[in-house]
Amino acid sequence: MEHTQERLLDTAAELFARQGYAGVSMRDIARAVGITQAAIYHHFDNKDALYIAAITYLFEQHTLGISEQMAAIDGPASRLELLIGTMLELMEKDPRFRRIYMRELLEGDEDKLAAIAENAFTAFYEPLYTLMGELAPGADPQLLIFSLAGMIFHHLEARKLAPYLPHAAKRHTEIPPLAQHITRLFLYGVTQS
Image 1 (cartoon, one colour):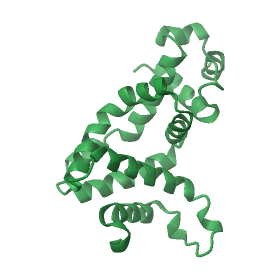
Image 2 (cartoon, rainbow, N blue to C red; image 1 turned 180 degrees about the horizontal axis):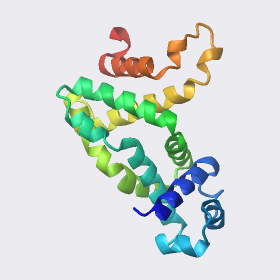
Image 3 (cartoon, rainbow, N blue to C red; image 1 turned 90 degrees about the horizontal axis):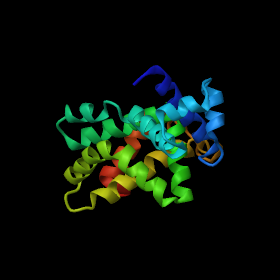
Image 4 (cartoon, rainbow, N blue to C red; image 1 turned 30 degrees about the vertical axis):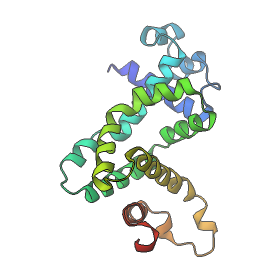
């Protein structure tokens, strides 16, 4: 990927994460990148194509190398813990993907959701689906993926509230203890975690 295209995707992702799809124009993106609108159209046919490419770029940045790391580990429970810890760390460092993801879920635009699923999620989804099948052969892998994603996303956001609640503990906001908690809860449920 050439440098201008990467800068364009990164900047567009930032603007879309902060302001949403409707809140960002191609002119805004061109201005932020320091190029003309015509230069954007040299790389992308329209705003929709740029939006999907920016989300795909973000998701690939978050998942780059995780599948390979998971493949090098024998036990499915160990692969799960690696996955959870890595996703928490990456999404803490760069919250743009989870902001866009949550916004799209709330807005429910079926065309955008379909494009995101087809373009951004496909490569990473299959190893997750396989892992969930290994962990719980009798369960629905897709529902398990959704449950796991919900736990990861919620814990990242709930950390902002945790210090103000009674019984607050520093470990409630730190990534390694959160990864261990989510892994145990996911594997063993409430009564054994």
